[in-house]
Length: 107
Image (cartoon, rainbow, N blue to C red):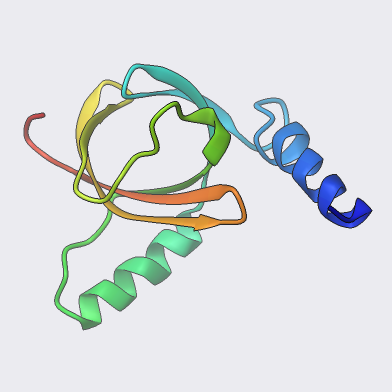
């Protein structure tokens, strides 16, 4: 791996997912995970979905893929901050998961 890529990998965990910098530690299906919310990207996601007649996401955040023992998957129902949600969309961009959740009435 190049020196640049190694530095980017270190920056992701030490800066982007550092709760003293950008992220917040939350309970994700019983596991504590550092995540970073992105309201602007959620708005873009919802605008696109609205044009296509799809449901809207309630939360969009980034998480380090290595923080999960079992990677979340689309359609999975889980508890996030103690509330039931379903994974609407999940994308992996170089080890950073982009997860969109939609609230549901029960797990």
